[in-house]
Length: 111
Image 1 (spheres, one colour):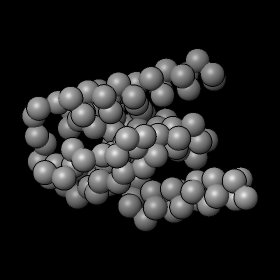
Image 2: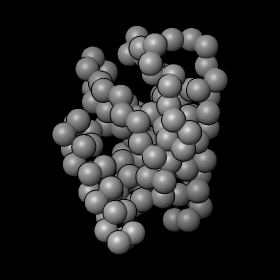
Image 3: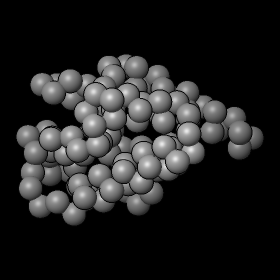
C-alpha cells in the first residue's frame, strides 16, 4: 500500500510539473490557468465536455479522501491522461464536498 501511494503521489507530481512546463494549450485552459500559487496544483473535475478547474493545496495529496480520488483517476484515465493535467472522475459537487471535508478536518486538527 505504501509503495503504491508513493508511486501515485510521484506520478501526480510529475503530471503537475509537466503541465506547468508545457507550452501547448488545451481547449479547457484559459490564460489564467498557468497562474497556480506555490504549494498548490490544478485539478480538472467533471466529464470531457464540461470540466471545471480547481486549485488545491499540495497537502491534499496526502489525505486519504483525496488519495481515493487519485485511485479512481488512475483506474479511469491511467497515469497518462490524453488531455493533460490531473483530472478526477467525479461530479463537481462531489469534489467540492470532498475538498470541504478535507479542509474542515485540517482546520479542526490545527485548533
